[in-house]
Image 1 (tube, rainbow, N blue to C red):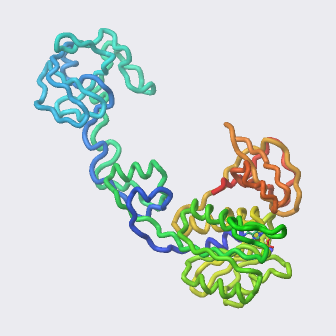
Image 2: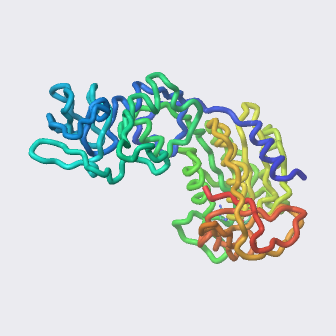
Amino acid sequence: MIDFRKAQELVLQQARSFGTEAVPLEQALGRVLAETIRADRDYPPFDRASMDGYAVRYNDLEKGVRQFTIVETLLAGYAPQRAIESGECYKIMTGAAVPAGADLIIRRENAEEQGGHMLLAERPAEALPAATLPAPADPRFPWRPFQNIARRGEDLLSGDIVIDRPCLCEPPVIGLLATLGHITVKVARPPVVGLLTTGDEVVPAGGAVSPVQIRNSNRWLLEAALKKAGAGPGVWGHAPDDPGLLRRRIGEMQGCDVLILCGGVSAGDADYVPGVLEALGVQKLFHKVAMRPGKPVWCGVTKEGKMVFALPGNPFSCLVNMILLIRPYLQACYGLPVAEPLGLAMGTARKKRSPLDEFFPVHCQGSPARVTPVTLNGSGDIRLGRQANALALHPAGADDLAEGEIVACYPFL
Ligand code: AMP
Ligand code: MG
């Protein structure tokens, strides 16, 4: 039996692109950008006032000028009427373009205004913008050229590459794309996922349920997880534990790029899924992974190169396989680096229960973060969804975990 890392490796070898598509920026959140993005102009695009104050000529300060005539007030978005001469200044606001000729901004707090003039304060309250800058050699002459001005092009020059690899469109990326004028973007096309739940006892969540039946929660769990992993829209179906009907339902999902089945992969009398998949010519990559829960998982690949994930039916087993195998597979298909687990400290001790790699649901919070196991009575316990926000790994071969010990945590999707 292989371990989960080997299983991940085998799955990741099958990763492939599903092409790209153009979407309006308002639909890009959570999608994976699939184009190189360059700066369309210099950034900042103009010498930009980074403080409210007065734009003057540095040379005037060197010459000893300490009083200036205010010729104009420059608000952000406005261009000046005329250039300043020696002894003149603009009153200027943060974000406004600093006109050529002016090359220094005196902060408002360091000046006084009297009858259309600006007088430099005798002792500048705070002459330097950043605490990290060295103190001026002469405290009575604390000015430097271009102080309080963000220079045109100091961040990026026109044509510079800004994004050169696939990246998840998080809010700051969306903001960046808007800054650069991209209101339509090329993103990775998600695979069309076919999800087939199985089981005679499993009935739709919204309908009547007899005492021996259970509601189909995995359809919802997996759909939500897939949505968060940026996959969909999908095709959903359910098959009873009947090899013929299973075959037919799987056949109906021919058009999908990826197939996920749920239930029927263990060693029970009604577990027909692996046999049916193999009979359909799906080539097995592995059956069973040395981990708990989720061990009976079966993975294979069709002749067309489509991945088939057949997950055990317990909700926790489903989730573990989703996080360990399906999510990394999708990330790799989109060209994203596969997310690494976070190493976090246990908030309590934990007993080892099985000799295999053991995943347990945890709640991570605090600073520094502490990992608290969430009570769960085995993989069939429905209380999984109450508090947990990550999976943690109690490795095979490890002893009991001590409080403070670092464990690998896989945040939920
Ligand atoms: P199986 O993997 O088919 O042996 O199922 C393992 C357990 O998961 C059984 O208790 C099933 O009733 C349950 N189960 C299977 N499919 C689902 C589903 N779609 N939603 C909720 N529970 C399920
Ligand atoms: Mg079943």
